[in-house]
Image 1 (cartoon, each protein chain N blue to C red):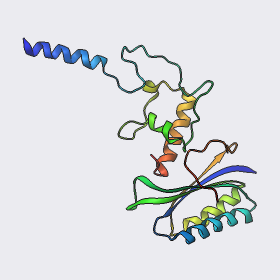
Image 2 (image 1 turned 90 degrees about the vertical axis):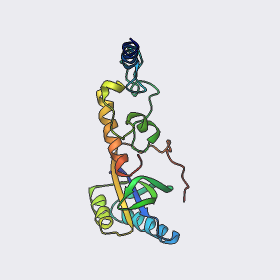
Image 3 (image 1 turned 135 degrees about the vertical axis):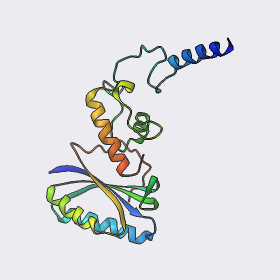
Image 4 (image 1 turned 180 degrees about the vertical axis):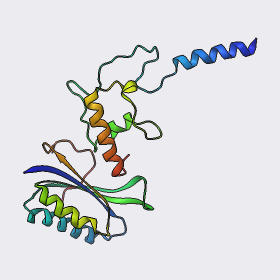
Length: 90
Length: 108
């Protein structure tokens, strides 16, 4: 019995666990792009603080499905991340 | 005339005066080949995120200039055979933004 209980708890946890910072726990996250619109931060290969938010721990670029960045900004983002990698900034 | 940003990484072992002569050499090269240097930023000695050819640190310099394709061809031809450089990158931009400064810098 104890084992079964543990198993159920684990399942619940895995449902609520986040894939990334940008995803809300209840799976109903907003679809608005955080990089478009007014007062949006500038996507640039020198802006490392911003770029570090959009790569995983192992340094891979996060997909749009996780971060909900618009297609146009995602293209700029991936290009500027690759430039920063070349200069060994990230 | 197009706007370009050029970043270069210089090896750490070089003494300070040689670094300055190297930078002024490339600035003159741009000015000679139908280009115009607008701004030079010094980002200082920075650690690499991962080692490049067993090198861990390097001096970063950032040059903003106007020029044509010939300017860059001449610049990169000279930098490709320079042993004191680790890496360089040229990026074409629509406009120079002189407001935002992402790294602590010293003007000179």
